Length: 95
Length: 480
Image 1: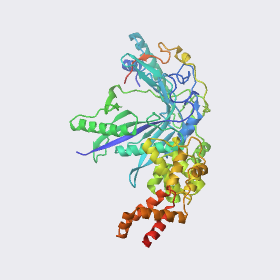
Image 2: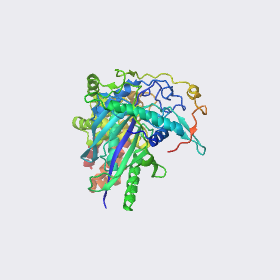
Image 3: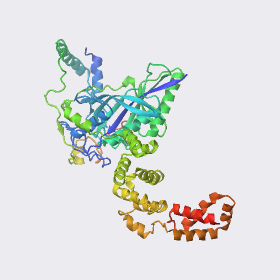
Image 4: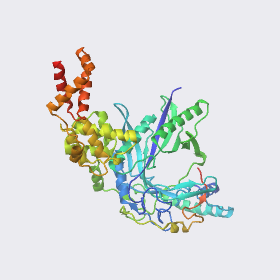
């Protein structure tokens, strides 16, 4: 896989971040290096090796279905750039 | 040209757990906005989601019931997208290893005709919040109470060819989940939602046409309308020389039309990757066995048993098993009184009349198996006639307090009169009062005897035993 300027722009767009020309160039270089490293891994013979889905060898970490109090609404809304006291306020979004 | 409609369904079902899928907030419907939220379900940095054990149990129950192969080692993935109904900017879902695959559901598509709908997969995921849009302004107001409510998404193969098949499938899913007790499955309240993938092709063709996905359909009736609209739209596009665009379309219930939401050119790229916060899930033999062992008797099996064991007609059995509550009331009452025919008579006659005619539900009645069984024993006895029984039944199901049946019979004098002497006196009086009718009878119009029976029973305040009245009238008329 080749990291191109178009791909950097596309990923930036999906991630809703704005990059200027210099940052795009930097990203193209750095992401390219990451992908290149992956190529090294691809050269290894992994036949018969189970894909790793989690780094710790644990499974089934679960909790009981018991209700605990939710947070005070003012705490939930506290970090929002804009809120009404009852809800967050976001730019109008209609798909 | 003849066209064939090809559809596949994605059905989202909210699981009826007490708490959300990854945190301990309540799943209760209808709280004040953003009051059922915590740092986990609002996606605050540094929080750790932990899977609700009950969600896995309910999900696996559904998978087993729908004949799926259960993925013994499954895991969650992140589905990334930017939309303010989801504060984390990703939904925790299952892409690579969904917990269930390759199931099958039998549906009845016409009397005596069944069809198998294949299930591609079922996965667990979290629900998103709700957005309220301001009427004219530039703002939307997210309410995250529903964020993190557990869902299963059931993805079918493109096996549907008509709206009737789709409706039969949804009814089957609804009934299955009701009997499993894992969801409220109310389309109107959004606890069951269906997205329809639809394409058309010339009849006889094997190739699939370009499909559209319809979202936002929230009732059985709208599904039928949406399918009719969208298939006609696609056929028109093709017949006028155009081609269908693969896109997501929103069903607008008020306008009765579908509208393009987003086209393939800017199709979502979800950049799925394994969810690092939640370790994989291993389903043990023990858990799977336990779930298999406690699968309930489902509607179809129940109906067949009612026909076999209780001698009900197939139609009656189907009506009773359509509601889990009615089925259990029926069975419990029959177990106590041993008279399925009589229980059926009152359930499908009286109770269903009030349900259909006055829009009531079973919980509106005072009707438990014990009192129902006690009533049935009285109604089936010689002690009261149908009219008296009906009065007693209505008094019982609409009473403010549990009704003392014996006291009510006494106070309202419902005990049947079977005193031949008393009945004979009444018959003679009725014959004397109705010379014209008696004349007709003598002239061979024997059916008028029924009128005399009615008059006699009325004279005895409706309490006379009809068989005895019949017999005495016949005797008295024969004497004339």
